[in-house]
Length: 144
Ligand SMILES: [Zn+2]
Ligand SMILES: [Zn+2]
Image (cartoon, rainbow, N blue to C red):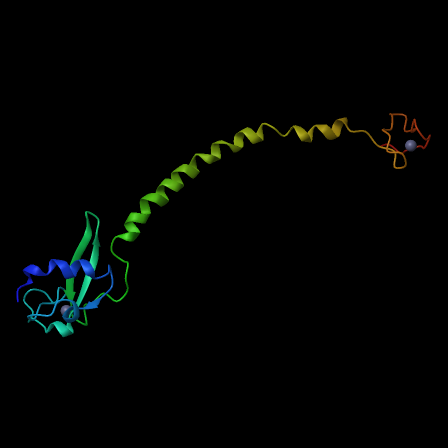
């Protein structure tokens, strides 16, 4: 049994999930990628097939690992690097925002309106003239 027909089963296994190699591709003993090419081939029951994602090939690539070298947790290889460019774009777009608040700084006009505001009579809410005498009800308001 040769590995030449092994392309099919590699497509069936999920990405970044270790599977038992013997279950998907029983056959001759194979070598663990982590142990190296000089290591002794291991029975496939003791090997795990792990399909990595590849940036240039959506089919990814499969490697065999022994129990010691098998990747335990999924999702390390490429996804962080792929997510980085998007976050950079967000930062770049947010850097342009600080230019806008300067327009808001030129518009503190509401601060000038209190100078125009004059005392108001507490009873009839009429504006009190500089004399301090309400023109509506005649009440005297203490002005500063
Ligand atoms: Zn190994
Ligand atoms: Zn009044």
